[in-house]
Image 1 (cartoon, helix red, strand yellow):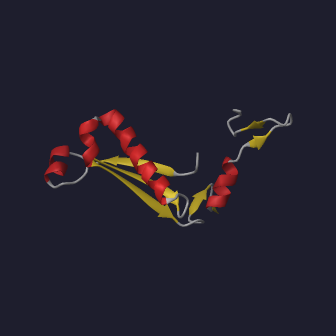
Image 2 (spheres, helix red, strand yellow):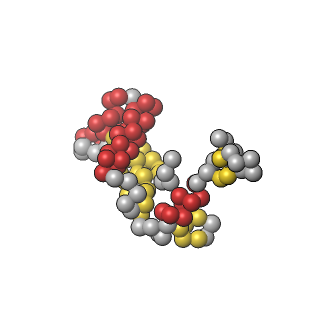
Image 3 (cartoon, one colour):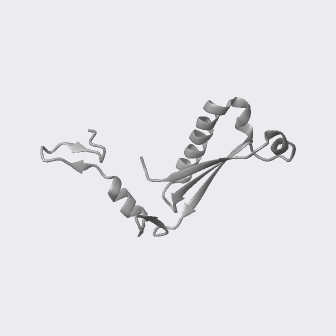
Length: 109
């Protein structure tokens, strides 16, 4: 899984939103600039929409907005340190074990 953070915001009063043509839900995902290709971004938007529809119902699909916001590498921080895409990917890399088997950071093969 590539690094990206996300948060969802549901807008209140769906009847008002529908009357003005706005969304029932806006889901914003922050990703590193140039992290994903156009095809991957399309896939993320489709998958996030599908996930929201699973929990809210198919009628919400046409009123669900997904926004991918690209963050410049280095403008993201963890524990007080600015990180870039390369730094975050290194944090997520599988860790070798003494036996030579590779485990991810949760200890799973």
